[in-house]
Image (cartoon, rainbow, N blue to C red; front, side, top):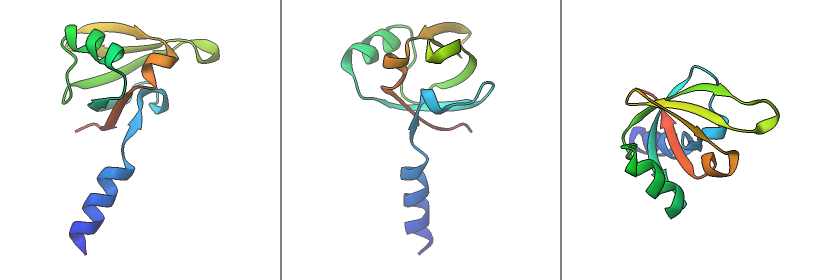
Length: 88
C-alpha cells in the first residue's frame, strides 16, 4: 500500500514550469518538445537540474528562471514543455 502511495504521489507531482510560483524551486524531470529540450540542454539544464522561478512577466508572457547561476527567459509556449517535480 505504501508503495502505491509513493508512485501516485510522484505521478501527481509532475507539472510544467507555468504552474510554479515566484520563488519556488523545482527539479527538471523531462522535456516534451525536442526543440525546447535542445535549447535548454545546450545551456546545461538537464533533467535532474534544479530551477528557481525568479519572475513571471505580466499577462502570461515570459517566465524567468535561474539554473546553475544562469538566468533564462522562456516563452509560455516553451515553458509548457518543461516538466518538473517538487524541489528537494
